[in-house]
Image (cartoon, rainbow, N blue to C red):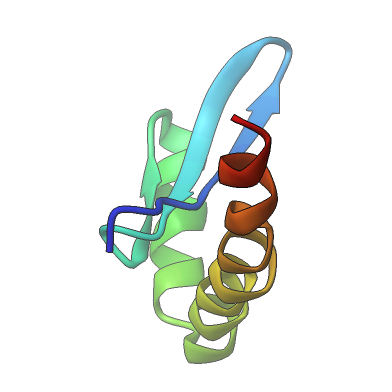
Length: 69
């Protein structure tokens, strides 16, 4: 539970949307980002892909980081 996966999207150095694994949904930060976040949050396959990325990327590599400390 203490491992967080964050997938941020930027355009012209401005973050417009983000997926946060602790929230389990997308959050929009601009008008464009809010509209897309609503669309992505209503698509169960998109949410499941991002949740799977936490499992595949974060949990798979956390042992490597702690072992090197």
